[in-house]
Length: 201
Image 1 (cartoon, helix red, strand yellow):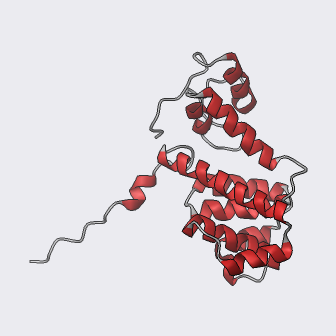
Image 2 (image 1 turned 90 degrees about the horizontal axis):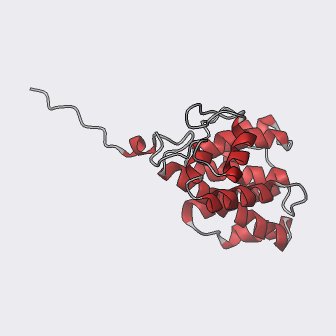
Image 3 (image 1 turned 180 degrees about the vertical axis):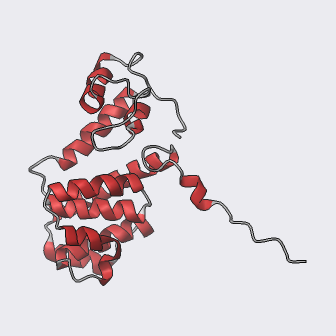
């Protein structure tokens, strides 16, 4: 269950109502949640608490997924999927499997992405992108050897976009988890201690 109040259709500004219409049709998304892709949609209704942040989020995420970016869409999606996996965001992982298929990432790669390091399905540039993503999300750094491998395959402009994409989706994944939104609504249960059985008499 979401941790913050959600903005209903009745209290939404005209701009928010227009955005809601794009995702939810004529429904009040608080009373009748659900989007066309099957998500609850409470990311949008929660971010609507601060409208400028909602539109900033929509615009920046949308801009990085727009046609004509320097970073190829398939590499972007592999990075976002690994960001979701390493950052433990089921929402990002689930949503971007769908996007990855839309931009032409082969199903065999999507099936292998959780264990990509042991798979022979990926090209050298795809491996470099996923290695860099894993290091950046998991350790807040990119090893010199990994960076050198990126430089062998990608121009500087694409590397900058890659790191921006990783950071942007990591930030949103953290917020979604912290606020228990979308598919990441039971995150605290993962960190609870499992009691030892009582001693036998």
